[in-house]
Length: 126
Image (cartoon, rainbow, N blue to C red; front, top):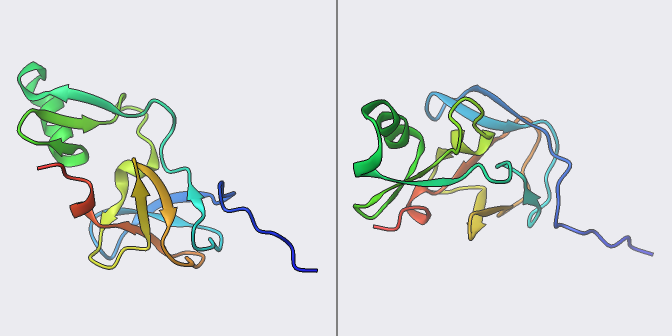
């Protein structure tokens, strides 16, 4: 009998380390099956900020780590002192992770020590 594999939640453990793609990246310790849900963001670690209502310092963080929402502002970490690893995802035109409503899933099998990559073009709403 073949066991049924549920792919809703992963026991993957992520780590941040220097990335060959850019700066710091998110890497996994474990093998991840295609279709597996990846808990890259803590609950409620997502907040919209209108550009006109942010300080200069906060705006610089949002420009670097946030997701631009048209010309109105940015979605960014709720607390820049406790950012989820998902905010450190790097871009690739051939990503191994995609999202549906900002819930992230493996697009293919991902091997241990492989960097988790997304296509930034799927995030921006411009």
